[in-house]
Length: 579
Image 1 (tube, rainbow, N blue to C red):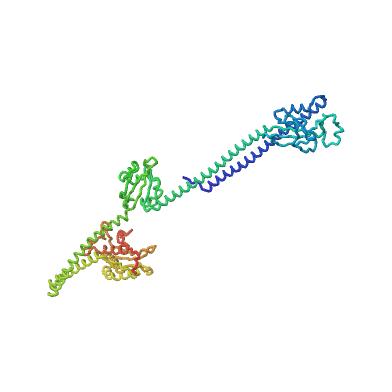
Image 2: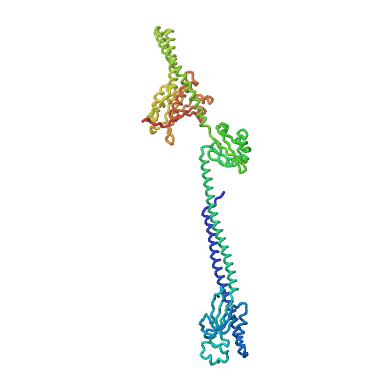
């Protein structure tokens, strides 16, 4: 799933919000202008109608006066007839005193005008919107009534047009009032208001949609961000696991993995991508097939994985199904655990138990043997001294004493091996320790024609270890190397410190015939030896000393590129000194 960046989401939402706000402003301004325009248009229409009617009234009045309709009130009839129009609410004329002289509705009989606008000339018009007592709004227009075109501000009006020319109750300051119904205006305004409300509803809907869209985008971002964090965290957890983890689909194709799985399988990343795992593991034998097809998990099954013809790795296999929404298997998760260290520890425990049993037996036997040996050696020595030096009896007695000493030496070694070894660490210079060991074996090496070379820097820092035990271990390795080269050779002893400064490594290397690979796993076992005069406890003691220092021993034979030679590498941890 691709997560859209937060900034892009918000920019999109803000852009839509700005567009909607702009539309809101445009629609609001347009609606307001339309309302005013329609209102003004309706008012202008009503005004034109009113002025047209007033002009018709004036024209009719002129025609009536010209016809001199005696005995008939032509203006009153005209007002009454015009006032019956459906668009006119009322029509009346007032004289200069403000009295209603003609009207279109009976309720105006004998009343006075309530509105007295000021006019600048006979063509001047005044208008207003008036609300009647019954709540009806009318558009009222007032205009000077001048049917003959008389200007009210003319000082010659009475001379030019004598009063006899008009009805007796009219004079030059008469005013006509026309009230037009506003039904069309109100209908138009109501329609405009409805249109405005509709547009407002649309705008609100758009605004609400944008807000909802904004909330959805934010929720989507938060959900995507949380999902991405969860996925990243899950990947980190899987990548940080000490065991190898693989996931496969129902066809056995590898879908995901961690680095530890690649290391255990000995494959590069490109090789494992979409790899068919059936080419690596036997699905039927390991039970992976049942997990994929039937959902049956495989728990802690030990298998041997062959990286190549010579390298095999013990693995602990756990397979659990991946269930889909319907509960059917959709793949499997495979956990691979390296059992090499556990196997080594198990072997060490078995060896320790074996050694403990041997030690208990050896200690008991040694105590039983040493006491009679002392007596036998004493009697043999006395018997030999009772005969001359050149007699066979003296020679036989001396042989008995030497063999008894050899038996006593073996018994002593056996007691030392079976006895717990207490480490007494102290600060020791590796160079001084190696020089001391070389001085102890130099005589034997010279006798066998063996040259000893030392490759140890004097600047190596001091280490905290038990110098007596380490000296004994190195002495055993050096003597074994000397005895292995009957016709002479070279022994190289090296010392170095690991890059992290935690381990001291000492190598003892010879160019002798080497050790047969078939017996290399046995040479560290007690009482196993390939020499007639050996006790089989030397290398077992060396390993015990190394393990007492939280270290170990490694064997290489033959040496790379030579086909012969042997190299023992001892590594010791820096010990803590007792307070």
